[in-house]
Image 1 (cartoon, one colour):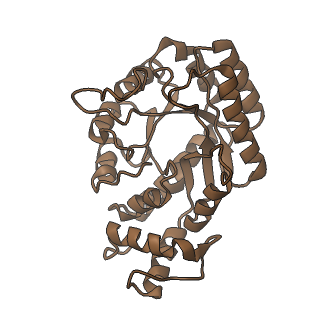
Image 2 (image 1 turned 180 degrees about the vertical axis):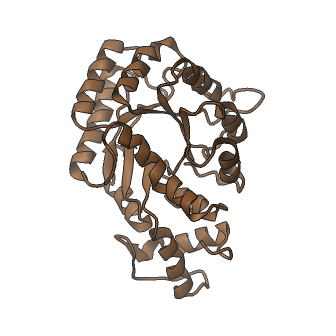
Length: 306
């Protein structure tokens, strides 16, 4: 991105061009910002020139999903979306719940096999059922695990699950508590929500495993998170979220290096693309973050994108 295209300008253009982009780069309308059509087109050319794997995406039990996620991906040139449907945070996390969520993912992947990559969810409190569900989902082509906040990542209940994914050579994506601060955990968060310290405990115990710390731009303490997991090369960080403080990516790059940062949106699509483009990155770093780093993870299990 040229240096005169600021973060604010990206979002201004993105909002204005959203209704005028259909299925990729076909700009059919533009209005409302005072910017020229050529400027908007130049910006979208920059957006669309990078291959992208969204490492943190979701579909929903709603009438417009998964088509709405595909529409956003088309607008922004996102080639593949790694989708999951975690259980509701306040639910009991019963086996029938995670089976229902995983069936939604299987249906979405079946509908858009060239665009979606599926991840399973489960609750390790129900170990036998979780192990069976892993086998079922992997047999249907899923590539990893997405967890929410029913059990902390560092809980021994997860140990056999983690060992299973070491054997599968697949990554475990875990939600990070949004209310986390450097002093206290926000009382509104569920007691079992994972914090950066839980990633540290799991990464130290299982150095062969791969963990993905969710949504660095999701409103949590990203400074604390980066510093906590810095020594553990098996912890990757996805940059998703709607919180786009200007220093998030430069700080993560400084602490973790360019090979451990993953592009993701968590369904904040324009923010997810925009803050990677707005960060001071070279072309090789952008290509790694947008596509290559996650594809290298997929390659470990033979599930990489061609």
